[in-house]
Length: 330
Image 1 (cartoon, rainbow, N blue to C red):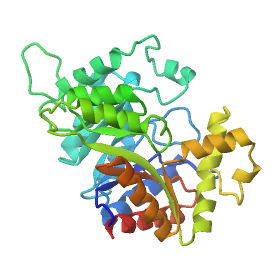
Image 2 (image 1 turned 180 degrees about the vertical axis):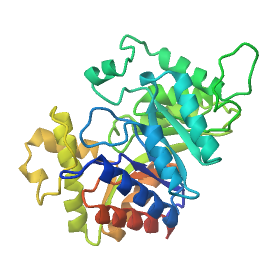
Image 3 (image 1 turned 45 degrees about the vertical axis):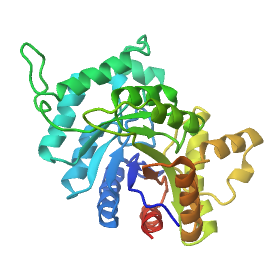
């Protein structure tokens, strides 16, 4: 019997070969509207910089566009890479979103730069910061949402607003921090699954209840490439496979069109890398996808899945999210 849990969308607003950012944003809004109609709980966007295939670098701005074109789906960051920013600025940005779209905004925080060292330097990020800085920044940001205290810097808007904070991670570091602060935890298993089991154990075992959350809550990233046949699903997945190989080879690119038999053209090390990176994925027709989702949820005891589908053709991408939703709701 399948386990019914909430399901959400993670969107990188992919810029496809031959497309541009404007097309990516309009496709993002169309995806969010469809996701809302299909019963997805959240629509999140991720912060990346200096990547030709990702349009969501100004994450709060892009989320405002999506929120304005939807009615009830929660919108949020999955995530904001906090070392790139002053916590006060993020509090103001997401305080603005929450003021405009009340009770719909989530704020996920990560400690990776979401880019390379050159772009990180261009963001005026302190490249010498140590691991202690991220927890301090998270606490500072959370404090900006608290009611005003005398002689304190204030986030206006932001102060006094109830904006759920999430910790994002792909290692035990984020798991420990989320557990210590009593926050929900989102793990990037859709592209960095290596420490998934260990991080889940660390988070659940060390969780301390907080004002925001009384028990551990885990959302896991999960790739879905769903189609009307297993063969078509495998074909659609080759766009992400190509993009990931390009990124790891030091030549990031727009999202390329799919190629039949792509993996078979790769050297063995690249194939092994893709097998590991995409181990948390469901690929194929509806029956195959449903079975793979069920197996993943049973293995991890996830409280929620955040589904991402990096598919070149927008219509095929919408179809993939539709099949995924039906698999979760059956």
